[in-house]
Structure formats: C-alpha cells, structure tokens
Amino acid sequence: MSKKFYITTPIYYPSASPHLGHAYCTTLCDIIARGKRMRGYDTFFLTGLDEHGEKIQKNAAAKGVTPQAFVDEIATRFTSLWNTMSISNDDFIRTTQERHVKTVEDIFSKFVVNEDVYLSSYKGWYCVHEESYWTETQVGEDHICPECGRPVEEKEEGAYFFKCSKYVNNLLKYYDENPTFIVPVGRKTEMINNFIKPGLNDLCVTRTTFDWGIPVRESTGHVIYVWLDALTNYITALGYGQENNEKFKNYWEDPDCEVVHVIGADITRFHTIYWPMFLEALNLRKPDKVFVHGLMMMKDGKMSKSKGNVIPVPPLVEHYGVDSVRWYLAREIIFGQDGQFTPEQFIERLNADLSNNIGNLLNRTVSMITKYFGGQIPEYKGDLNDLDKNLHDMFDKTITTYEVLSDDLKVTESYAAVMDLVSAANKYIEESAPWALAKDPAKADLLASCMQHLASVIYLAGMLLSPIFVNKSEKIFDQLGIPTDGRTYENACKFDYVSNLTVCKGEQLFPRLDAAAEIEFIQALMAAPKEKSAA
Ligand code: MSP
Image (cartoon, rainbow, N blue to C red):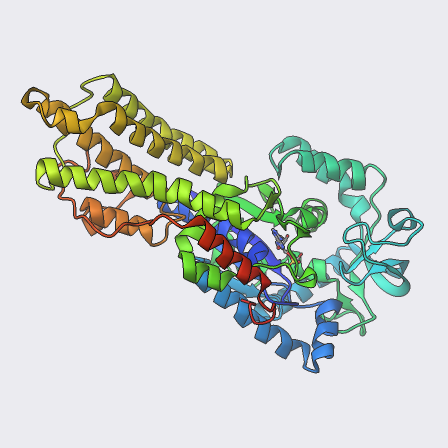
C-alpha cells in the first residue's frame, strides 16, 4: 500500500493581485508536496481561489464589471504567478466552478435536513473586510474589528445559524486526542482561551445583504456565508458529493492518508474551530493537521496591497532565477514564525548558501575529479580515516534528519540540515587537503576515497534540495554524470551509487552576487509603481 499525502493552501481572495506573501505560502506547500512525491508518497496538492463574498462584489462594482469577470481576470494573475514560481499543484479550485457550487448547496441542504442549521435573525458588529460578525466585547468601545483593525458597522439580518453548541465537545475531544492537530501548538491555546472558553456562539452561515455567493435553496434571498463556502473547497475539489469521487475516496476517506492544511495565522479560527465542526456534521474524517505559518512582513509591517509595500515576484524571479527565490522563502523565514523581507538579507542568504556553499562544493569537486581522475568518480574505498568516517556518518544521519523534520513540516530546519552536510563537505575538503594527497602516490586510496565521498554528498544534497531547486538539481546531476534514469531518491541515498560515473564540468550554478548592486536593484523594484509591478 502506497503512502498517501494530501496538502492544501488556503484558497486566496482574488480581490487584488497576488504578492510575495501569497507566493510564500503556496511555494512552501509546493516544496512539501514535491518532497513527499520524491519519497514515493501518492501526493495530492491543492490550491485555488475563494471567489465569492461582499468584498469581491464591491471591488467589481468599483471597477464597473461583473463579479465573475472581475475574478476571472484576477484568476489569470494567480495562475501566472504559480507558473512563475514553478508550482506543481494537482488541481486549482475556484469556488465559482459548478462542481463546487452544487456540492455546497447540497451540503447546506444536508445541514437543514439534519437540523444542524436553523433560521433566526442576527444582529451584531460586522467587518466588511473580514466578512465577519463580532460581539460588542470583541469590537470594544472604539468599534474596531479585532482581526484587521478597521471600523465595523452594526447590522441586523435574517440568517441561518450553525449549531456550534452541538459540536463543541466533540471538537475539544478531537484536540485532546490529536495533540498535533494544530501546529505550532501555541495556536491551539489561543483558540481555546480566546474563542472556546468565553463561550462559542452558534455561527451565522448565511447573508441577505448582498448576492455574490452560493444561494440557499431553501430560502430565497439568502447566500451561503463565504467561509462555509470556502472551507468546503478542500473536499469538493476531490469530488465529495459528486459522481466522480475517486480522489475523495483515495485521499480524504483513506485513514492512512495524511491530510494537512497549511494556512496563515489570520485564518486559524475558521480552520481549527468551524471546519472540524462542519466535517463532524457531515460525518467525515477531520484533517490530521492544520499548520499555521507566519507572516512575511516588510519593514513597515505586513505586506499588503493596501499599504503599497508589496514585492513584485516576476521581476525577482526573472533576475535571480526561481530556485534562488524558492530557496530564500524556505530557508530565511522559519516556517511557522513571522519573518521580515529585506533586500540585504535576501542577497546575503543567496550568497552564503548557494554561491559560497553548494555552488562552491560542486565546482571544487568536479574540478578535482577531472584533474586527478580524468573525470571518472573513483570507486568507494570505505572509510579510510576519521574524516571520511565522519562525513559518511553525517551522510546517513542527514537522510534520517531530513525525513523526520520534513514529516513534522519543519521545512526550514530540514533544509538547514542539508546545508549543514554541504558545509561539512566543504570543511572536509580543507581538512583532507586533496591537493597534498595527490602529490603522494602512497595516498592514492585516500585521494580516491575523498573524491568519492564528496561526489556522494553532492548527489544526496542535490536530491534533497530538488523540491526547492526545480531546475538546478538537474544541473547538479548533469555535472555529476548521473544517468537520467538513475536520478531517484533511493539511488541518491546509496553512498556508493556515484562510483565510476563520469563528471561533466558545466557552468557555475550560483555565481556570486554583488551585494551593493543587487540591493539597489531590489530597492528599485520595491519603489516601482505598484499596479505595473503586479503579478
Ligand atoms: N480566502 C480566505 C481563505 C479561505 S481558506 C478556506 C483568505 N484569503 S487571503 O487571500 O486573504 O489570505 C489567504 C492566505 O494568504 C493567508 O492565510 C496566508 O496564508 C497568505 N498570505 C497573505 N498575505 C501574506 C503575507 N504577507 N505573508 C504570508 N502569508 C500571507 O483569507
């Protein structure tokens, strides 16, 4: 039985162009998905767009176009950004698609029949931006949205409510039985203390004040709340409630398939409180994990279109290459924590890790194998001294560390471990001094062993980095002379696989960047007119 993995990004609001913050989340999920595929998991990776709601309707009206035309246009900007970032998603769900709309209507009808929702009326403080109602206490005396800080307005409307009270005990039991359901775990405490303990109100799940949403069959004039509509994308995309539901059976319904939602901290409440309740009401399994990542900030706070501080992604990728941008996103900001983008750190990260470390190791090794062995990687001679033995041990340990950390979604740490192996190999060159070994015929075996150890480490590092380096890993393999059909995870994990292959010196993979000039280049990008710089 193959190991299975289902990973999703949030579905983004196509209310404006996507920026590096959106690219951050999708790229990290892509790296995780590619890593699992590399290791033989039957993987399904979903992303998409959350296209309904009042905000979209208002933005479309402001532009004088229909909401559908508005989202259709922005959808092309998202798909183009995913192309630019080499995102390998298996499906792209849009909540205006028929497969989704029909299923959401059915889900709502099921809730009506089972009395999980009831009709009443709602009065509260509403934030148009977050599309959320808040209580008097939550908005405080200033009547400010606790999520985004914008002013809220008082509203009353006839509405359906979802009976949270019926499911809250089941939810708490699920938290208890699945201590890694919410990661990082501090987020769970936040949910319990801020939302559940003070008393969870039933959730208002329809709206009557606008019509850009999925209609409620049972009551004319009501549209389904955008969050109930949005969350269900994770199952409608797999075919839940549809004729063609093989993927749903294969992934969601298989208890051995790990189901992971990756989200930003701003939407934790919906994913960890209401989503499990909806699933319980549908009698469906819940996700194994909701992983909450941090925000990509700029010097003046959160990156956002309205602040005008977004980084345009396409010119960044065009200039530095997609692998370098992906590397920066995975390695610079610890996945799960907030991080800040600065041009200085961006360039420093690329120079330190890519040019000075992995690029340097590859150049030196291929040059030495060419010089000392006519290009043929020598045979494995075993661990001839402590330096060899230590590097060999580290090779083995890196595989385990990488697997354990990446299964825990410690993406940054897992790739830091790979770079540690690369640093160790560079240090090993200094300590083994192959140039001295080459002068002494009695040390021929040591020299051969040294070259073989280095080539093995590079093959493994190139493979482990391939979920990030969608282009450069292949170039690393080309330079090592790995046959196309031999480029597998299993082979890269074999210490003696590379012996007898013939290296092929190629271009420098990561030329060193001139910090001053590059910082100037990025600063100019950040200052460019924003609409033009949109993805
Ligand atoms: N449509 C809802 C999600 C529904 S999921 C069923 C939504 N969309 S959003 O476009 O506003 O934001 C979605 C996600 O984008 C955030 O949760 C976060 O993962 C990501 N990011 C948006 N800006 C970001 C940064 N500046 N930094 C990191 N991630 C960012 O909420």
